[in-house]
Length: 321
Ligand SMILES: O=C(O)CCC(=O)C(=O)O
Ligand SMILES: [Fe+2]
Image (cartoon, rainbow, N blue to C red; front, side):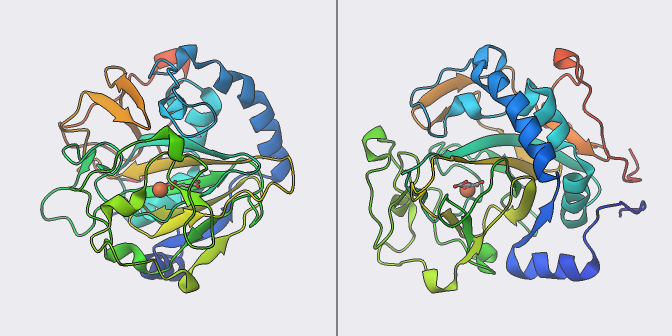
């Protein structure tokens, strides 16, 4: 139990809403000017991938790839961001007092880019190959998936690629993660789904569909229009996608996804490498980061908290160590 009252905890009504809809927000994390200033200072650091734990080997420029994974480990602002109480307290409300962050990813959309295709991720073998669940919950767990907090580092409008959700879809998987998808960079920005240009960064998510003839019911979709500095929190098993970037402005949209779990979940139990989005990298330098409470388990690897001279603060939740 959480014995400490946290400043930014979800209210009981918000928690009920989160459990029903699979998401909550948008909520404010930064003032717009604050976000803009931080992003300006961040950009040159992101371009310098020498310190990135996956060696900055990017195979496809401009789309999601391993060089924009886990930059919270080497970039101070992102380290601070994943431990921000406005985010962590809300995650604690949903997951309980003990929380780790295992993954962060940037999702850029440049003018003209396709929308992200509809998808759900449960054990994250989706792009990692069917034999490599990246997260494994204890057998008696009531949930699967991870909590993602997606933060708008730029404004995200319908025309620049706002996220879309199908509320309440988080408890039924439409995709089978024991199936495999193949990666083909030729597909990027070259796919049509009905009326909309959508794809999954070189993968075709339809390959994982349990029923090849099923189509997401887009009439139920809601758009998350967000201003820079806002975040939204959702289960990765929620049906989610994004609008294409219509290219009517030259402003890109950038989302930063931070993924959280209780430490009872095993992270990368079966892999020593990441092989996704056409990239390949060793997990040797990978480690989870505790962001709240305490860890009573021994199955996960954690980073050296003083790596790069930055000490990640841990939110005190009153959890017994
Ligand atoms: O930003 C996007 O377009 C997709 C984000 C997403 O799929 C995620 O955060 O899991
Ligand atoms: Fe996703």
